[in-house]
Amino acid sequence: MTRQSSSEVQYYEEFVWKEDLFANASDFEDQGQNPTELCSFFPPSFWRIVKEDLNGAFGLERHEGTSELAYGVSLNSQKLSKSSIDMISDAWSTFKMKHVYKEEDSGEIEYNWSQVSVLTRQSKTKQLVLFIDSPPAVVDQIVRDCLLNTSRSVGLASHVSSAFHDPFIWHALLIGALETEYEKDYWNLRNIVRGREKGRDGEPDFPLLHDLGRHLIHAKEIFDVAINTIDSIMHHHQSLYGEFRKGKALGIEEQTSRERLHNIIQEKLYISEKDMTAKKARAISLNERHHNEINLGYHVVTQKANQLSIDIARIARRDNATMKALALIGVLYLPGTFISGIFGSNFFNYNPPNNDGSADWRMSDKFWIYWVITIPVTIFTVMLWAMLDETVMLYKKFIGIVEDAMQKWWDDLAIFNKRRDAEEEYDIGGFGANTDS
Image (cartoon, rainbow, N blue to C red; front, side, top):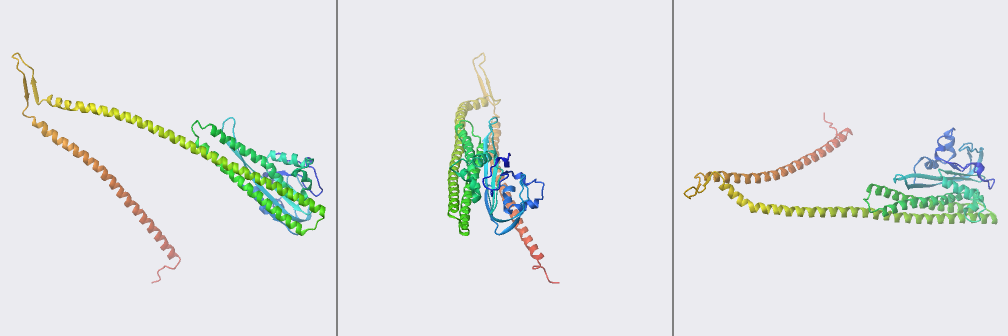
């Protein structure tokens, strides 16, 4: 990431210290110096915003009295001389952003995270300002619109020259620059959701819809935490200003100037908080729209499945009518086929008329054999079918009894093992040991 060098930053007051305002979290890992000195330079709880993955944070540490501060620590080529400084406070704020976008070539939804922070250190004679992992657009807005342009007569940019009197102006400047990025992130998500709404004629891609739902949940969480962070900044800013007014006597002109700057920062933070609240409301609305789209997808799939079931039932009814027709044909032809089969057997003999005109039709006196064999076989077949059907039912019932018995046995075994383990622990403790010898 490109950092703003000292040559590009104007110095507005001799007390305002800012040689290199922008850094990356990786700059804290490889500095070629004693890590103990670097750790002692920054407040202990500050390192969370550098090393941990946070969704937002605000921290404040006050150092009362005189302390030796190791200003010889180098970060991004900045050097400070050792001096005895009466420290007042360190304050830092962190904001999370999730940039979701759609690849133009593949159409896949991609995303990346940003964790932007600002640290301000205020003493009676110096002020340290450090922005960490700021996106290029945020760097450009802060530096070009605020630090390099003092001709503005309105807004925070016109009061940067008085930043030494209130370090919270840097937090407000960062929040103001991040609002544009938050707005872009929201509209990127909105355009993706709107694209899914317009393309609902095709088959719903449920994995993609659920991934998009995850991004929307993160968006709401990010806005929630950002609102909470801004609220914390406003609260501590007001609290510190009240303590400052009680503890230091100022001239009327300086008091008026400080109070004006304090009010402007409070107003800017208040407006930013309301803007974040509006963005959160839009994110919630967008999430509800997305849920409606998912529900619509489920309903469309269910409707298509129901229509398919109706079509299958219609085909089944048509097949059923065909089977009925075939069965009717079978019923019509079966009696005649059965009778012709009997009379066509060897038990019957028919001789056509001979020369004298007489016909001969005879039945064997052994015809009873047919009935002796057919009737028992028929009865046996019916009984065998009934027995097999009952056997299947009995088998299923037997399997159920066996499964219940096995489950009961496993439950009893588990209870026994627990009881045995408890007794062993009791004996090991020496309370249940047998003392008889």
